[in-house]
Image (cartoon, rainbow, N blue to C red; front, side, top):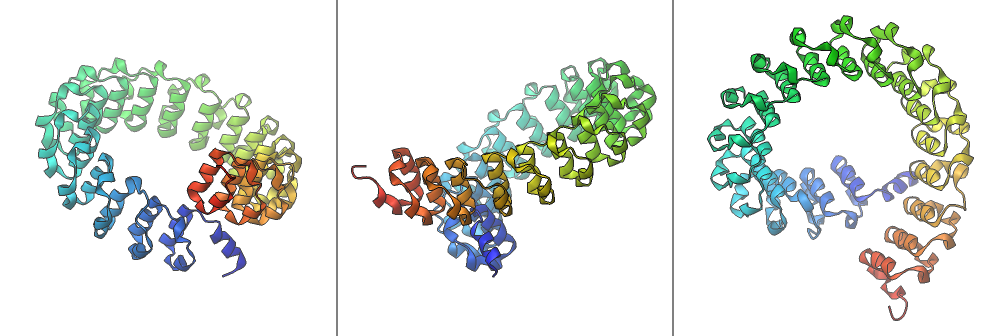
Length: 443
């Protein structure tokens, strides 16, 4: 293994190790197993159960036992059943109903019951139906209409009815249609247009009409077109450009034009280009670089340039580099290091440099400075211990040292222990009890 790869492996977080071993278990011999937390172990063992003998099983697994046992039920004898909450039990029993005899049913809320019965209706005799909310009923009946006789229909509001009828139109005869508002009708008719004769069309506002006609243009003759604002027109014309002859183009503002032209460049001759600002141009050119010859580049701010070059580095020759501030540069160089020679490094402050060096340590010679704060140095050395020989250790506060030594105990010989407060010691000793002998006398 090369030195570079060893450094990369040494910097992996617990989640990083979980991801690596899940995809490439051959790296197991290099893994510092003590780093892995409960959630990491659960994720790993779901796909690589052969590592079970490495697991201490002592960590808190949070909501991950349900997921683990659903994939690998052979680990059930390790499960601390009393720690599972209602959400975990619902998730587990949906996939592994065999564990029902262990379940403390009182932990399940109405939401948990709705999810469980949707997949495992045989547990209905255990359900406290009164705990289900209107949302729970709408979701449950969409999957399990057999429970309709249990439903307190009066609980359901218009939104719940729209969601339910979109999946289960059989319940239409029970629906109090007057409860549905414009948004509810728009959502329902998109999926179930046969209910149009029930609709109170006057309740739909412009956005409701736009969403409905985008999927069901058959209702155009019912539309009150003057209700549609500019944003609604841009949404509608993206999906149904045949309505362009009805559009009052003057209603559309910059963001509306960006959204429309990204999908329908055919309307470019209608666009009032002078009204678009830097934000609009950055978004539009990201989607439609063909319009670059129309762009007044001087309108773009540093942040606009970062947003554009992130996706379209081919516009670099147009960039006014002086517009970019330190934060813009820090973010841009993380993804496009080829622009480093254009950078005004003096603009980057300590936090900008830190954010850049965490992912691009190769720029250390360009922006590493001793005037960084102790907090910046502590964070940087935690991630890249190779910078330790350049660190002004005296700048680190007690808190900075506690954070650093938790992750990099090899630098203990550099520490000024007198700087640590009792809170700092608590934080440090929780993870690194081996430093207890460094406590000041009397602490």
